[in-house]
Every structure is written in structure tokens, then in C-alpha cells.
Length: 436
Image (cartoon, rainbow, N blue to C red; front, side, top):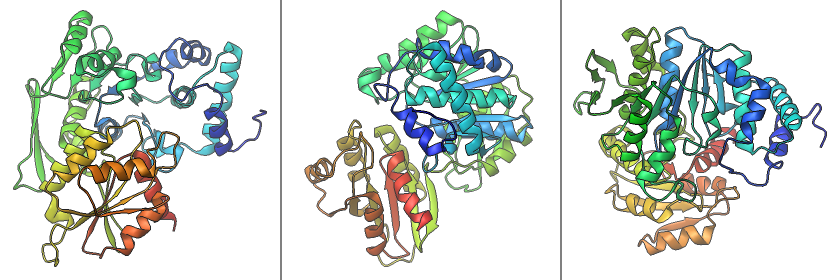
């Protein structure tokens, strides 16, 4: 296929088709292409934060990038997947990259790939394009979100100056293993000799500790070396503390656990970060699709990815704590919530549904449709799981646009519509809401 003068959509379609599988773990194919492009050497001129973990990577990377940007650093941010437009994955100083810049990068990556006579997956090709753009723009700071695992993820071709593991839960078992020790081993693969590791959970698997010891890494662990305090009766402020500093900060729109990890990372980086930079970032940082409340089409919406047990536990806790904020106290049916729901077939759908059912949130109807994705759970699978869990108020639709319409038709402006289960669920629902 000749790729001269092709649109971004044509490039993305082409890239999806040049490799035998969507996920292909390992660095042996991607490293020669990265060397050809010169991106590994370019990254050494920047301060690189690499973030792995089961949940919270998006919020954590967004917070790191926002703090660095407020401190005056030219900041590159790489995240995945997008909600609506591919360009959301690659940002400089908070702004998505323009189509023409992406197309130019894809042309260069494709040329390098052919020169190396190698096949690359979609994620490998697009990641290399991101790194090339960051290098071409001489970004001071690179904030990189690992796609899957750590050790064998394409992001790991770039040596970080600070490594951060948000937490370790059970997810992607086909690729990473089925227990926290195996998964911890994969995620600890982002560590390097002597660099700081921020570990954002109070429980550290032995496999991670072993890697810390082996590489003589400086480990800062949540609950041991830094902490945060959220006073339930104080809606405006929270407190971050470590051995050297205590800060009272404005509450951000993101989960405090993730923001505390991000603050710990920037403070450990050696960058010139002041409390004023952190405070400004608390007021401005946001991330679409993560406990994301919006009012659209005279309805109250809450968008949250929540695609595994830990993620849905966080959603339930946040929503329970803040329910009065999203549901008016004077409505005839207090606590009335409906759910627009779908998931990918390789996720633990039954466990997520069980958690939501047992949450005490008094969910009314569920509006269910398949995601437009090759890995989507089909409608029969989704409905069977809901019925097996004793959920009988289920409305089905052919796609998430139709499910979203049904939710609007059967609610009032006092109700709350929760859209969850996957990035793709949110993206397809939100695309309809914003474009129609």
C-alpha cells in the first residue's frame, strides 16, 4: 500500500493491518527501529517519568505532566487509549498533536521499519511516532504511560529517570500471569539501576522488592515514605506529606491516591518543582473518562473506565463519598442511578458487575450494548452475566449510541447516568453525546 498523501485515518487503518497480532510482547523487533530513528538517544536529554500499574496510570501521568508544565518545563505526555480522537494519546504542554505532525511521524517510522525489515504492532508503531515527535520538539520532560505490563512493553525501550508503579492488581492474566507476584515482576521491569521508584500501594509484592534490591533503586512507598490525608468534612483542601514537607493543597478532580503518587515522583526527580507549581496544577489538572462528571443534554453524567475490580472499587468509594454532589437531595427518588454498560470480553465482567450490584448505590436500570471492537463482549454474554447476578432490569441495544439514547429517554434531569466498563464504552457514548 502506497502511503503518500494519506489521511490520519488511512494511516491508522494501515498500521492496524501490518502486524499479525494486536498485542505482541517483547522489545526485540521494536529496538532496531527505535535506534534507526534516534529516539532512544534523544530521550536521554530529557527527564523521563515512566508509569506502570494496574489502575490509575492515566490520572497519575496527567498529574505529573500538569505539575511539570506549571513549573515551566516543556512537557510531553503519552497515554493510551484515547476516548474519541487518536491525537489525545500524544500531547505537548497539554495540547494534542496535530494531524499533519502525526502523519509526518508515521511516514518516518514506516520508512525506518522497512529499512530494518521488521513487522511492528499498532501500539509499537504509534509509540515510536510519539517518541519521535517528543524528540523533534526538544521536550524537557517526557511522561510515559506503559500500555501493558512493563518489562516487555514498547515504552520500556526508553530509560526512565523516575519509575512509578501505581498499584498491582489482577488484570491481563493471559499476558502478565494470574497472581500479583508474576504481575509485579513484569511491572518492575521498568526499573533501572539507582533511579527512584515510587510505589503507590502499601502492599509491595516480593517480586518488586527483589528488583528494587537488585538495582539498588531508591524506593519511596505509599504509607511508609509519603502519605495523604483527605478530610471528609473539608470539601476544599487535602494534605500531602513526606519526610521533608507537608502541604495543604486544593482538592483536584482526580483521585488523591494518584495525585499523591505524582507529587512524590516530581519531588524525587531533581526538577525545580515548587509548592506553588503543585498548587496551580491541583486547580487545573483533569482527565477525561476518570470519575468525570458532566452535564450534557439536560442530564447528569458520570464517566469512569472501571474495567476491573480495583477500578470499580475506587469508583464506588468516590461516588459513595460524593453522592450528594451529583444527586440533588430534594429529588423524589434519592439515590436513583442508571448504568450504561459494556466491557471487553477478556475482562472480568462478572466480578465488575457483582461489585456494582453489591455497592449499595441502588442502581435502577442497566442499558447494555456491545462495544464496536474486535475484543468486545457480545450482547448475549453481557446479558447472561447480568441475569446470573440477579439483575433483571436490563435494556439492550445494538450499540452504545442507542443504549445512551435509551438512558436519556428513561431518566430525568435529577437522575445520574453512570457510563462505565471500558475506555471504549465511554468513548462511544461520549462521541454520540458531543456530536449529536
